[in-house]
Length: 197
Image 1 (cartoon, rainbow, N blue to C red):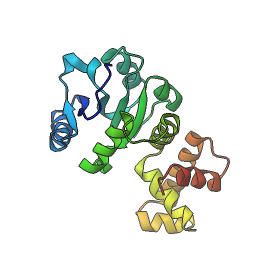
Image 2: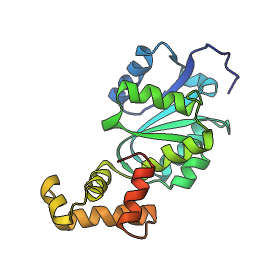
Image 3: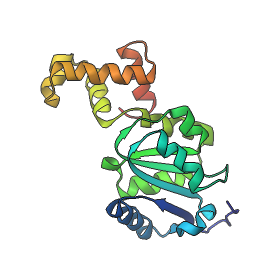
Image 4: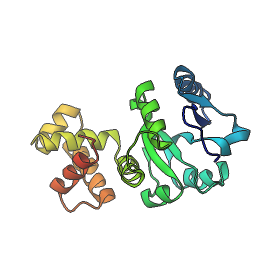
């Protein structure tokens, strides 16, 4: 990754197997004067590499070193459906942030790319910890934890989200297991610290 000169636009590489997703992300880059897309053959020159997938799992983490063998490569993973990858391994492979496609507006995309490239002024280790950890929760899990934080019981959450009570408990305990939370309060406090609720 070559050194950037102050005032240069950020170089962004995009890897997205789905043509529509790729076109959308390329459109976000084209709309922002501070960003410039680099072609796949110049991926090593990118300040941030955006990887868009349906499901983030071990195979996606294995793909990252093949996209760029530079140990300083910084990845933003855009996920459409599920995060099933190991978070510490993702950090180790250079994932600096994860954004759910449902929440990937142009503004969110640009801010996240700038953070991944190290241009947002935040401390890299704190930023990496916070943004990658957000990937550990799905949008359903965030919705359930948000309602628990409001003091709702499982049956109330089930009614509001149109799930069965059993599904709410399944979602909650799945999130707790993945976060290694001891109880509901611990899971809610994690979500608050991560800025999810």
